[in-house]
Length: 124
Length: 247
Ligand SMILES: [Mg+2]
Image (cartoon, rainbow over all chains, first blue to last red):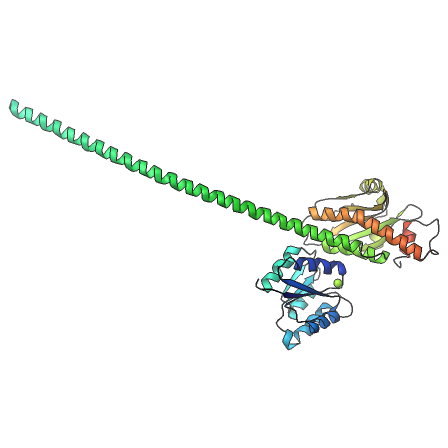
C-alpha cells in the first residue's frame, strides 16, 4: 500500500515529533500534524486521513470533543482512531473508546508500540 | 541301536548343525548389512538435520540482530527528537516545558522537580511536576548523591522505578554548562506501568544534563539580553530564571 495518510493531533510539539518519527518507520506513511482538535478537523477537511492519532488533553478543542466530531461525520465514521493516553487517564481513555476510538497507546510512548497498533488497525 | 544307525544319526546331527550355523551366519550377515544401511540412512538424516539446525540458528541470529537494530533505531530517533526539541526555543519557559515533557513522555517520570540555586546558594524548585513545592525535601543539599552531581555534573539513576520510602530521589540530573552546575532535576516517581529505567532513559538523562543545561543557559542569556533591566548583580540563577518563565 502506498501513501497511507496519517494525521497526528497533539498539542505538545515534543510528543508530536516522537509520534511522527514512529509513524515514519512504517513504509508508505505520509504524515500531517495538528496542534489541537480544531486544527485537526481543518486538516481532515483538506485531506481525508487513513488513520488518526490523537492526544486527549489539548487546548481549544480536546481529544474527546475531536473524536466526537469526527465520528459524527458520515464520511469519517470508519477512520481508525488511536488515542494517546497516560496510565492515570483511565476515565478519559474509556470515554474516548466509548466515543468510537479504536485503540490506545499509553505514555511513555515507545515507537514499536505505536507502529504495531497502527499496522494492526490498517491491516498492514 | 546298531552302529550304522548310530553313525547316521550323528551325521544328521552334524548336517543339521552345519545348516543351523550356515543360516545363522547368513542371517548375521543380512542383519549386519541392514544395520550398515540403517547407519548410513541415519547419518544422512543427521547431516540434513544439522544443516537445517544451522539454517535455523542463522535465522534466529539474524532475527535477533534485526530486533537490536530496530531498538537502536528507535532509541536514536527518540534522542534525536529530544535533542532537537531542547534546542528548538530560546525562550526559558519553553525550554523548561520541553525538559518537563521529555521526562514525562519519553522517560515516563511523573514526580519530579527542577531546582536551581538562588542568590543565597540554596536549591529552590523552579518547576514541580506531580508534587507540590512543599513536598520537595528541603535538605537536598545535604544529600550526598545530590552533592556529588552538583560537584561533578552528569546524572545518577537507580534502575528501579519503585518509589522509596525515604525522600531519596530515584534519579538526579545535573544541569549546567561550561563545567558549572547551576541546578538539578530530582525524580521521585515514575508512571505506574514503567517497570525499570532503561539504557535509553539514561541516555536521555545524559542529554538533558548536557544539552538541557546548555539550552537553559542560552535561553537565560537571550532573555536577559532582551530584558536587561530586570536582574540584579546579587541574583542567583533562580531569580534570573524565575521571572523569565513568569514565576
Ligand atoms: Mg496534551
